[in-house]
Length: 339
Length: 296
Image (cartoon, rainbow over all chains, first blue to last red; front, side, top):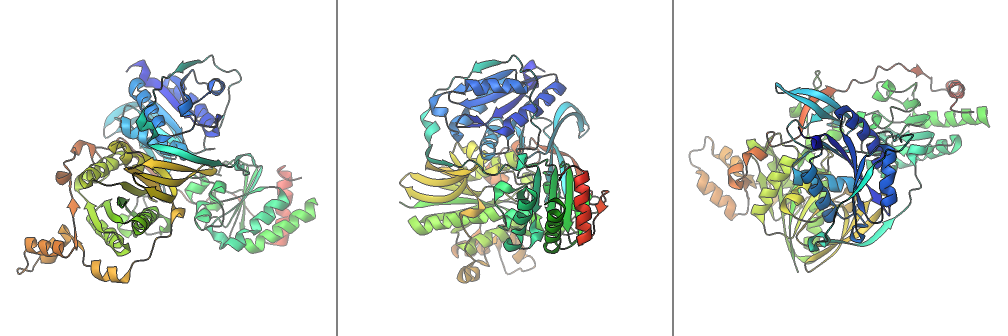
């Protein structure tokens, strides 16, 4: 096995030169994976005028940044970006490549995996390195790609036993961002880019980005609602509670799908993973995909009228009752005690 | 200018409505108990393709890779207004991951060319990977626009699409042919048309016709097929042989990702403190949270 095959790569996502949090989270995880493999952590960065950002990855343990820097690469565009990453993977054959489970990562990773015929697992909630016996054959140091599947009824461990390159996407917040006390002395390696007419088969005409007013990851208290809130009107009571106790409102995927709340506030495997001081789960049954995004909260209160709801399996304080009856009482008690 | 679209659709287990009977006691899935549905975003993709046809003319074909009973899904597409439906089915395709799936789909698209636009739902609810669309596009060297929210206009060989991105949207102009994946908010699928249901409920695949002639010596398969073809009620099936695919790249064997382990989720049973849903209970809870240094 050549030295190259022990590389762990993280695609560093940037918009307007600003890095995505998830990229640093993945570098932090990638560092651990690289340690297990006795390998090297590298960052792949594409854009324009990104020297400072490239150096920032050294704080997370990247020993080398492969940097494609060109004015025409300023904004993410599927064809040139996937061409560059695919060619790099072909050339260097890293053992593992990680992408954020974002709009960009989920657009890019499958194209790269297809081109390089690599295995790709979406929305992993855990990644580990382990020796594996699969169909009576022994494989050393495979990437275990762990994710809930099938409506959350099972947790699947996916492996790519025979693929030279193993790829995964991970949603924001799933891995913890852990900077090093001292940045490593990494190097920046320029990747040449030659514009090609085919790169512009899709052109960006307009871009509208709003700075998010919602930052669930930073909220110390989250009041979250599920499908069990019943309807949009009932869901609004969560904003009353959040306002009184100083928290953000979030929801489950079922609540998002039902139109109770916007996707940017979705907690869970396909939303954001949060670790607040207090998480109040209201009318949430507790599917594994949701629990994957909140079970590390410091304290969890569950309010549900079904005493058998799985959410009670992860909570610290359980209240069996009607949310529309319990929440006003909770608001009153809080005001009485603390105001 | 009119546009010729192909929509990739999938029949999926209704994962949002999994009942107790579906999960066996050992934690495996009892697929026979699973109801199947039209993957919601694929249905929206078909609706967008039909809207494009309403606006500019052209044709809409649908194709699905799946077991033989996926013909139900194809009939649904015909009820909505698809001009033609194609089933891609072979035992060799079973157990495919997204890479092996996209290989077969891309070979089917090569055979169904020419087309201007390939539509697909962003993702299927049984896997939520959103990988098959881009992987199919890559294999055909097609540009892609994922997360499409609206088709703003088509003009000659160009199409303008509004797509969702993290906290905002983009307007993209793509050169045809290309592949578009569609999110749920893009459109509301039209209901089945009664006239089309009457017309196409008898649309059948070759295997379904074979079943019809079983035990009926007066029917000959070739004649029956010709009759169905002439009435526009024949759903062609593309197999591994007809697609001339490399078997090594299909199905489970052609899939780089393998399921190593499946654990059923152990539900409930965690130790927690029960708080009564009363005024006193809520006061006690606030006290506990103050002791936990969360409040106060």
